[in-house]
Length: 365
Image (cartoon, rainbow, N blue to C red):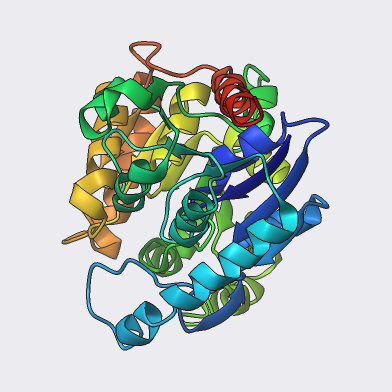
């Protein structure tokens, strides 16, 4: 098969790509991480490092609040559609596979106009805005959770689960015994400025007791990584050696960091929550407060109900209350155990590939 992969959710895309052996793959995405920020996107860096061809497009972001970039962003949709049509005509895929996000819409719409079949995958427990739009043009819709059946046409919706990265499944069950209690802080590929600041304000207190692995992102808007690097260098050798600070981890490194940790401090995107549940990692979760329909809060509460997490709202979480809550979790770390298996398997990527093959076969017969 010749497959175009697109979308804003990279973790499940990588999980599927890793199992697409012997197929021609082209990834279409965003080259830069944030509107108005020239930091290279995580997907651009990751996909190109794997030797997979990457075609960037510029298109309108689906924004939920007005910013100085809103109107200029909307004007980019026609350009994105034109670029997408050109890419598809040149590559001639058998199928397009979309993983949500605004970046997927022009390529999916162009594929529909060119009569190229489309398969989309929904990661969340409900339905993302972009995928709700894309579902009208999709031949098949793969969902991660039974609850998402309520948001898509049932006749073309398939429950596949949320594919886990191969790096995550490989570390499952690999026992780790750290000399020191290890915290892993991550805000996703972009990092979280709010979480970074909480860590910054408590850094000396944290390092006095714990080993800290901190994925801070590389947003040029906040310069968190550069500021934290200066702080790390000012700590002195003993504390500095207990602080591993990075902009990004490669997928295998991120899996190792997650597996090697005793406690994870994170946002609660659905892919993060799926990985935490699969690896049974205790988590201190701070949901993104302006996520669509409180999506991250629902994800976080789901993990809490499994017995693995505590959930703290960003509003009102101060440096002082953060460190108090963190130390309370550490003191009681043994109580955080998963209470049920949930929908966490390592076969979801294979199921999605099966859907792709069926759709491509119907197109070619």
